[in-house]
Amino acid sequence: MALDREQVVLAYRYILGREPESEAVIEQHRQGHASLASLRDTFLHSRELSEQLGHSATQAVTPLAATLPLDVAPRPVETQADAATLARLLNLVAGRWEAIGETAPHWSVVSSDEFAPERIAETREAFYASAGIDLRIILGILARIGRAAGDFTRIVEYGCGVGRLSMLLAGTFRQVVGLDISRAHLRLAEERRRQLDIENIIFRQVTADHLHPEQDYDLWFSRIVLQHNPPPVILHILDGMFRGLAPGGITIFQVPTHYEWYAFRTADYLAQADGPAVEMHMVPQRAVLELAERHRCRLLEMREDTWVIAPRADCLSNTFVFEKV
Image 1 (cartoon, rainbow, N blue to C red):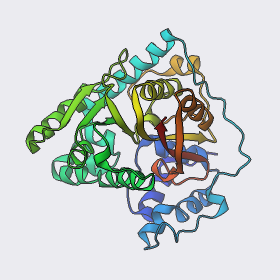
Image 2: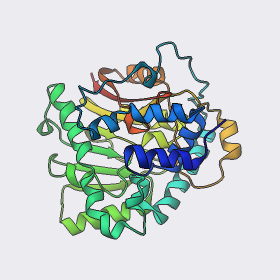
Image 3: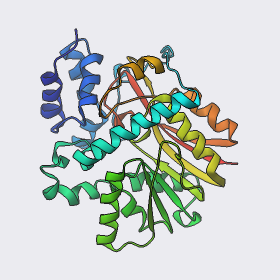
C-alpha cells in the first residue's frame, strides 16, 4: 500500500529539515515504499543527511539497501517516435513549461517552498546563489579531464530557465548561450542580465520545431532539465546536441537512467497527458551510450548522481561527460 502524502512530507521535514523538491518527488516516494520503515531507512542513509551531519562525501557509507542492485531488470521504455508523434510530445512539453513559467518560474527551477512566487521577493538572491554547485561541478569535471574554462569559445546551457546559472557562467566563460523552451522564463533571465549589466550572455528560445537554435558551441551543459521530458524527447534533444557539438568539444549532462516503477509507452502517455505539471522521466543508459557512439563521441566520465532526483534505492541518475572525436 502506498504511503500518504503527509508521511512523505514529514520525513523530509523531520529528517532532512526541508520541504520536498516537488509533488512529483513526493509521489515517487509514496509509490516506491511499501512501509514507513523503508521510507525512513532511505532518508537516514541518504547522502544529504550524511553531509548535514558533517561527514564528507568520501566518508559517507551507503548501505547496500540504499543502492540499486546489479541485477535490476530493464524497464519497458519507448525511446523513439515518428516525426508527427514527436511534434505532439514537444508541443505538449512547450505548453506545460510556458504555463509554469508564467505562474511559478523560480520554483519550477528549484522546487523548494522558499522560492515559491509568494516568497521569491525575499529569497531571490539566495535562489541565484544556489547555482554555485553547478559551476563547481562543471569546473571540477573539466579539471579531471585536463581541460579549463579558457579552452572553450562558447558554452551552451540547455534549459537555462531564468538564468540562475547563466549569470555565474558569464564570469568564467567567454560566451554563454542560455537556451530554454519557455518565453516566460527567458523574459526574467533577460531582465536579470540587464540588471547585472552582463554582456557576454545571449538568451534564445527553443521551440518544438527548432530544438537547437544555437550550433556554434564547444561546451554543452544541462542539469535537472532533461528529466522533465518524455524519453523520445530526451533522445531527440541529445541527438541534436551531439550533432552540433564542435570536434574536440565537451558535453556534460545529467539524466535519470532507471526508475524501478517507471514505464513509458507514447500512446498511453499522450492519451492521459492533459495539463501543466513538472514530470519526471528517464532514458536507459544504453540508449544514451549508443547515441553518443553514433556521433563519434567518447565517454570520459559517467558518474552516479541519484541524490539530484531523490535519496532513494529504486532509482538511478547519471552525469555523463563526452568528448566529440
